Length: 69
Image 1 (tube, rainbow, N blue to C red):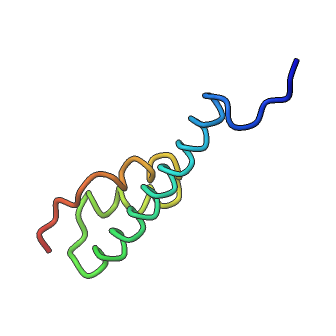
Image 2: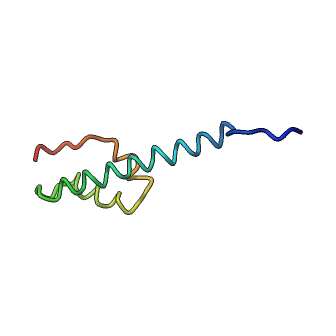
Image 3: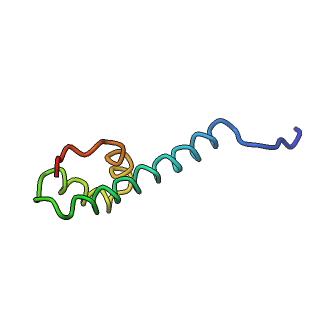
C-alpha cells in the first residue's frame, strides 16, 4: 500500500467540525459579553451555560440574539 498525502474524508470532517465548532463557541462568548448590560432573560441564561458546555455553545453561537437591548 502506498503512503498517501493529505486528509481522508473522515479526518477532513473532524477538522471542519472542530473549526466551525470553535468559531460558534467564540461567537457565543462574544454575544454573552454583549448581553451583560441587558436585563436577565432566558436567552442570557442559556448562553452563559453554553459557554461551559462546548458542544452546546458551538451551536448556540450561530443563533442570532433575539434581544433588542
